[in-house]
Length: 387
Image (cartoon, rainbow, N blue to C red; front, side):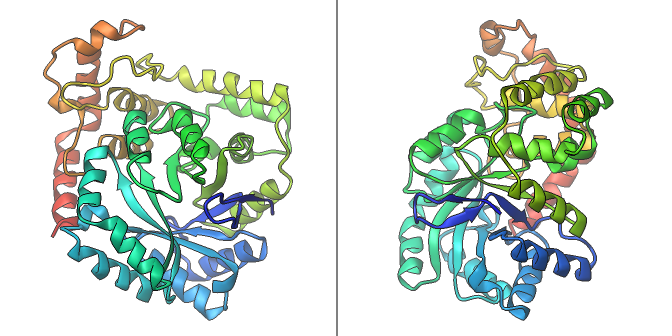
């Protein structure tokens, strides 16, 4: 395994982390996977309060095999369920019980979407609460995971003394959410950056167009599309660790081998990704480049990321498109910013260098990704998490 330094603590974090949201349904398989991860040098394990059964599963296996001293555990405060500062202890104490530990290495604010949400959290006194838990030895580092626009990420980055951040980032769209700009800004501040969805929930591993698969195989037939995606991320020194939501031992073994053998990409290998992305973009319906000239929207709509989710729904499948849409439009947040609230003012269209008829395209996005059944499911989920 290879490691990179967390500048905030000096700790060495494995370049491959285990994302614990998608554990196998087989407890035996999950146990073997966690054990092989730890034996293979993976020392960053990411879970969250709202990942059903994840904290308990990880905690039980780590305790049963005495792994706690070998690994870093990162978990997250469920902001969507917090009603005020009185919620902090309630959730955190429950998480310690689930994880069967008396401390967490990294405690993240889960799914921050914008600076307004972050300001509310700060006004509730989250920084002092974290500091108090640090003095008790229960939390070692404070971080946040982010699902919003690049502009909002940069604002959030400057609002607190963060010691880690987690962003969605992969080669299929360097400008999605925090994007490359956010990655470099965080690294410049000495903040370790953890990457989530490096393979778009597996779509960049098993859902690529046939020609894209052929391009990768022609360059190196011994590397899978998944390995190519991970190597693209590790080739960027600003990336500290890449979370892979592995659900089988075979996936774990392949990714550990890829991490152990990683070497910087050659120029030819780097150039290959442009050709692969071009193949992906052939399936795109809206020719948005993610330049953000249309932003900010007076209504708060996250226009480029609505388009990115819409395109992904065709290029990588409707499930991936919906997932991206839910996170990038803060569908579960206090102030959703989906395309349905567009008033057709045209300000965005006047600034678009691609001459996209943005209000018209937003209606298409809404029709595909905000049908009545989806809106109903979101309302039900918001009610459940905010009870």
